[in-house]
Length: 402
Image (cartoon, rainbow, N blue to C red):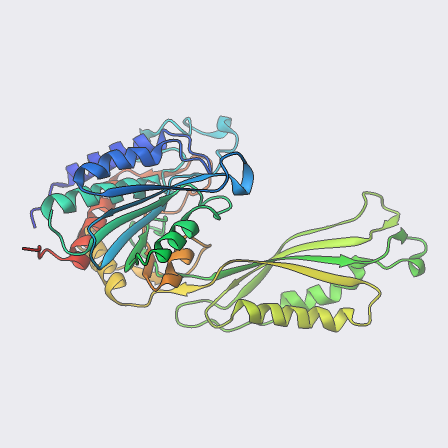
C-alpha cells in the first residue's frame, strides 16, 4: 500500500492529541472530546452514534455518561478501537511543571493530563483510521471506535452499557484493541493480552463496646479478627499459569476505634482486594474466605459480615489473529519484539472480552499515568498511529470489494 511519510502521522496525531488534551474532561465528563472525533470520522464514512446512559439530573456514580459508538462498514470481521476520554483529577495544579490542560511540547515530551492515559492513543486511532480508509475506501469488514467518558471512575454507565446495547441488537465485535498505555520501557515492548480479575471486599466485624479496663464486659472486634486476618493474608490461592501470576490478596484499609484510648470499639472495618487468575473463580475465593472466618467466629462473641464487589472477571486472548497482528505491526514500525503480559490493573477490556471478542491493550508508555506531570514521548505518537494502521491492514486486508 502507499505509505504516507512519518511526518504526516506525527503531525496529525500530535495536533489531534493536543486538541483533546486541552479539554478538561475530568471523569466522568467528556467536555466535547467525542464531538471532536465525530467531526473527523463522519466525513470518512463512519456512522456515529452517541449513547448516553445514567441520570442527567444526578452527579456521582449514576451521573449521565456520554459514549460514542462509531462504525464504518456493516460486515465482519469488526475491529474495534476502544478508549476513554475521561481523565483522573490533576491534584494540586501548583505542582505541575505546565498547566495540566494546556498541552505543552518540551524536551521531546508532550506534557499534560491525558498524555499517556489515554488521549494520544485515541488520536492515533483516528489518524490510523483516516489513513487506512484513504488507501482502502472499500475495505473488507468494519472498523469501529468505542469511546467512553466513564472509565476512570464508576465505570457503570460507560463501556459496559454500550456493550450491552450492542449485544442486544446482535452487533458483535471480532477484535478489540484497547488503547491503554501498555508499554513499559519502549513503545510496543509490552502487549497486554489479558487482565486479572478484581474482587473487592468490605469486612465488618461487630463486637461489644466497653471500657479497656473491663475487657470481660466487652468483645473487642480487633482482637477477634486478628487470627482470621493473619490466616487470610498468608493463604495460598493458586499457582497462576503460563499467562497469569498467582492470585494475590492485599488489605488496603483497616478502620476501628472511637478516638479514645480507653474505649474498646464495637466495630472493625477492613477493605481487601483479590487480583485473581483464570486458575481461580470469584466464587471459589469467596468460599475459601468465608471458611477461614467461619472457623474463627463460630464460637466467638463477635460476628462478621462481608460485602463483595466483583469489578471484573479475568480474561485472556492467547496467541492468534489479533496478537499476531499486533506483534507484526510493532516490529514493522519499531523493530521491537513485543512480549505478552497480563499484569497491572483492570481496563474496560473486561466488559468486551466476555462477548467472545479477542481483546488486547496496546498504547504508549505507562511511566507517568495518573501522576503529576504526566507526559509521553512525542516521537512515539506518529509511530503508534502507524502501528494501528498496520494492524488494520493485517486484519482487514488490502483486498477490496468489487
